[in-house]
Length: 337
Image (cartoon, rainbow, N blue to C red):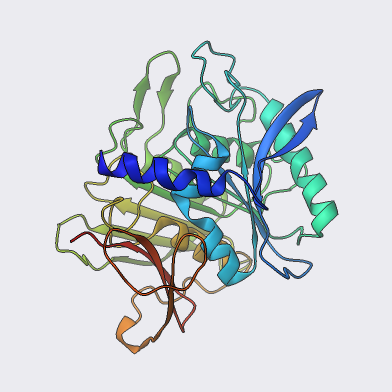
């Protein structure tokens, strides 16, 4: 209940202002999206599309992921589109992406064309990430690359379903970062069957398929430090193609559930998923594998602490805060006494 109250209180802060919502008409249908553009964003900057889960919307995804904070720190734009109600041709009455056809692939391509033309984003740095159904839409975008628009995807807690056969094999070699919890009871880590949607692949099988398709080899593997000693460790595998810099990363969150992994109490507090995803995207096209994930954090210096509005504040209890360090890292924390 405490988490729900926090969400209801904070969400209106993102409901208006420069981040939207905005409307975009595609195929005579008005679509909604939120867009965050950092102040003085230079031309040829990256853009990340963040796709919500079943029944969600762009505004909630903007709050849940905290990508706007990273956007301001690292100079990239973030777009949070909203799916149509019953976009998957079902009858749930909830928003859902069309992963058994091309209507949302075409919508996202058209939206990106419009935004890229207006803001002059780098056409080689266009990325997509998503949660749950949004993760499946990310896979769908990768498999249905028509004009090589997306340069990397990072699906979290999603899978590839058997019915998603409109595009069987990616026509391009796209970098992929898969994150999945072993105790996910919605989209099972080991694959399974979802009522009314059919069978879907396991997370390891998906990773293996992209490793083969991208001609990658295992470059490094390790386990993240268990920062809060709760035994919810994260196993990391990073595959690399040394010839072209293509990558496949795989985070297995042991005992992780169906959630956007984050610092306590929002989820697994060994890493912030949004930050790891941006680390991945920022290296696409590079032959380097990582930003030294095991670096000594004791050598860094805290520059400032800000709240969700970007205002500099002092640390205090019962507030969601962002700690910004001199090495460019941002930590999202909430302290409860």
